[in-house]
Image (cartoon, rainbow, N blue to C red; front, side, top):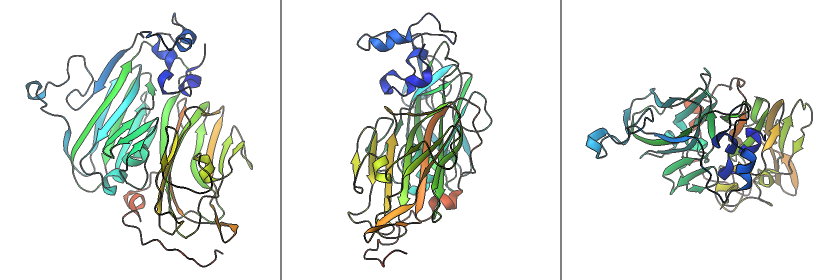
Length: 386
């Protein structure tokens, strides 16, 4: 039987096909290979669809839309006070979350950087996902810009959607923390999921982790994620850059240290824009698997905000024991490469078996917001870099 980990990387349409075609952890009577070989047939699985909303907080059958005598009586969470942690989902498994939709009326940087999403699988005490709202859905710097991609979308810059499959065996719990310092007046959401008979024992759990380093350290690679335990697969990166000096900032190479690599990585790219499937600099573009949603001006100037995404849908990075992902801090200017120090943030997305290594401490509110409000005017024509 092909493993669930292999099928997750095959594309959104056939993710976890084995688990959803009725196979059991011992192999079962279903045939996942046959399911994958005949995509034109509407084969019906044993799972059942459910949805969590504020009106149906447990996803119970026949329990949706009961408020207001069925006339849209309570479509959202209202008046979440500062510091509160609100539970969005807490259900028993086995199951697979298929889609998360969220919207809020105020989509400024204070909200997108200080509403913190956390997700817990199978009674783990530590979250497997801990990411600010905007960064989780694929855009950096607290900017709600339109995004259309394979795994996440910001439809019209207002509707936040995530389509990463998120399997769980015994329990799925999703919360958000209001760390904005003021009440959240309205929080709309819907979480669509399936309950399934069982999951294969090697089904990876979804993880996402946010980091920021402002500024980065000269001649030290920026760490996107570290201490990831295998077996697993790396499936995506969201990067935000605020250039702290003029010139091209993205000459650095991505490095993926796998399965005991020390000095040198197994996978090493050729440049930052190359990892995001572009070339010779950066501009605005969007595709299903990679894109740039913020890029400032046409010049490589100081204090510009850049936001990029890269989904490894068709090319997941598989590892057996461990993974560390970094990006060099190297630029280009005046005919040569030079070491740089810029402001970087990132969100890493991956699957692995639990338990996971504890995450580093999430940057606090001040660190998450620093310098993303109306950055100083971009500067050009710099002195030659040192």
